Length: 268
Image 1: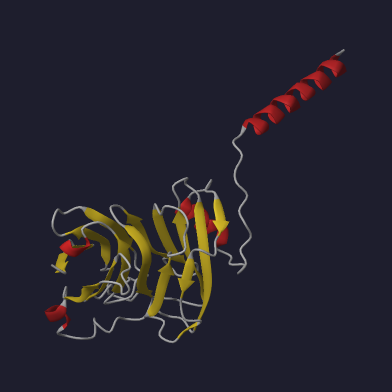
Image 2: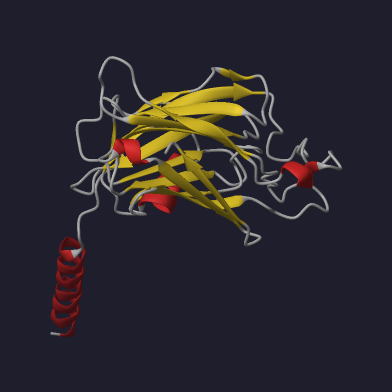
């Protein structure tokens, strides 16, 4: 009798465990990484969430040089002109950087077709751009960049200039209208800022953390961006936007971790 009771108890326990396992929410299977980066699954969970629905997409186009001649200034362009869905968020990162995250961009009263920014690279690495659509799914584009490395831990040229404070916060740029009657606006702007990564001895982190684009006329926010230490010094930003009241001009607002506010009006 005791043997039967023990067997029944074990069977009941097994059934309860099976029922608990089958009641757990199903998690989406991650696609394999064609570049076989050791940080693929970790960074997806870190930046997109552990249960994110992820797919590779050839409509998220990343343009970089195949080899980083200057590891402190690597040009990156994320071309979303062929992306077929509404863009809710764009997150970019460099898999093997000490701080992988580069920027998070959220469109608001504008549609983003292209965004470009120079970044640092510490070693040869895969670079990612993930775009969240209106259904909450993530579409990922990837490209591999070869590099001699050291870009994140190299001292900035700005820091070696004793007069760097004289140009600190200066903004150089302009608004451009596409040719051929295409609607939209291109903003190209460079901001003088050392963007210290905090990875060089005795030089603390000092970088721009947030960027906002607003319409000059009514202060309506067109887009916002969060930046991390992987962005290059004296960063160069390019945005291709589609929005209403394109002739009213754009107000650029940036704030760094030292509390400095940089403001510039482009256009009218």
